[in-house]
Amino acid sequence: EAQVTQNPRYLITVTGKKLTVTCSQNMNHEYMSWYRQDPGLGLRQIYYSMNVEVTDKGDVPEGYKVSRKEKRNFPLILESPSPNQTSLYFCASSLSLSITGELFFGEGSRLTVL
Amino acid sequence: TQLLEQSPQFLSIQEGENLTVYCNSSSVFSSLQWYRQEPGEGPVLLVTVVTGGEVKKLKRLTFQFGDARKDSSLHITAAQPGDTGLYLCAGAQDSNYQLIWGAGTKLIIKP
Image 1 (cartoon, each protein chain N blue to C red):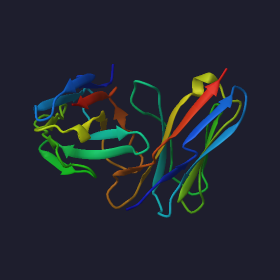
Image 2 (cartoon, rainbow over the protein chains, first blue to last red; image 1 turned 135 degrees about the horizontal axis):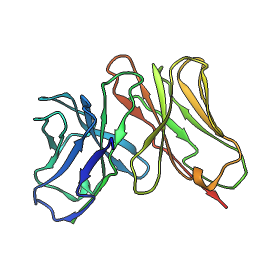
Image 3 (cartoon, each protein chain N blue to C red; image 1 turned 135 degrees about the vertical axis):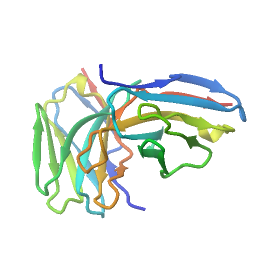
C-alpha cells in the first residue's frame, strides 16, 4: 500500500531533550516536506527536500533540522525542543514538485514539549 | 507575505443543507488545490484546478477557480455527516511551486 509513515504518532517530552520524528515513503517520491499545524494557522512548512541530499528551509525552520540521505526517508530533528514547538507535525511527499503535484501526507505526529 | 484567506473559519449545519466555502487571495496562482482532513489523519487531496473559470465536480462537491485565478470556492450540495472535516485550500505559483496554504474551514454536519 502506498503510504507515508511517521513515527512516533504521539510524544510527550521535556524542554531540551533531543528528539527525532521519522518519516518514510514507499512511493519513490522525489519531493518530501515537513509541516506543522497549529489551530487557526493552518499548515506551515518547516523544511522541504527536492531530492536526496537537497534540503531547503520553509517558512518556520528555526529550531529544526532535517536530512535526506536516502530517497525514502526524511527525518525531522529537534535538537533542543522548547514548549513553542508543541504542535501537530505532518510529513508529506510528492512525485515531483509542480503546479499540479499531489501531496501525500502521513497521519501526523502530535508532539508536546513540557 | 502572500496569503490565502479561507472563510468561514467554522461552519456547523444540518444534514441536507447546502454550503459554500471560499478561498481568496490578492495573488495570482497557477493552480489551486483543495484538501480534506479528518480528525487524526493527514490531509487528502480532493481536487486541483488550473484554468481560470474552471469548474470541477466530485459527486456533491463543486469546485470553482476564479477567472483571475486569485480565488476559489467549494460548494457542497445536500451535505452529509461524512462531509465533516477540515477543508484546506492551497495555491501554487510558477515561481517556486511551493504551496501556500489557507488556515482551513472546519465543517461539521449534524445528522
